[in-house]
Length: 171
Image 1 (cartoon, rainbow, N blue to C red):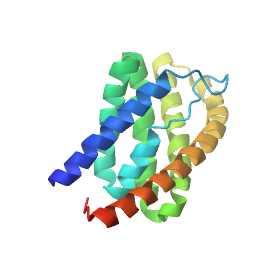
Image 2: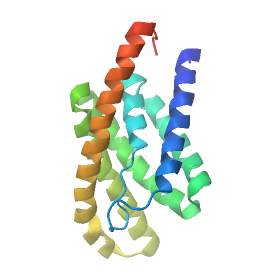
Image 3: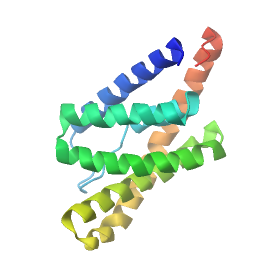
């Protein structure tokens, strides 16, 4: 792996963990359990677009592990990992199908699948399939927050591409 790419991955992972931990300290944006913006996903989408899906997966894994060590706990990590796996799978399956200007669509798919993964983990842990009844509420929040974070990622990707072209960074 090239030094520049590894450095970019390390910086993006650090930014992602920082955003994750900072967001965990904020009060909920709505009084609905499990709903948050997921601002660190902006970094995952950006990494997938600029560096590749594998690299984004590594950054996501670092964020989930370190972010939960710093701000959550073991139980929170279980939900983050399960949601992250589903979100990452959705992102991998869709990111190459959309131009950068439509990364927000990828983000919506990923956010909804993240919610599905978390509900699946909760249902498995509690052995309560009735938890899936909460999925429509989380799906709506995933659409809204996914559109927001995806739109932010579009702007960040374009800014970073412009910078990369200016500086000659080859990723």
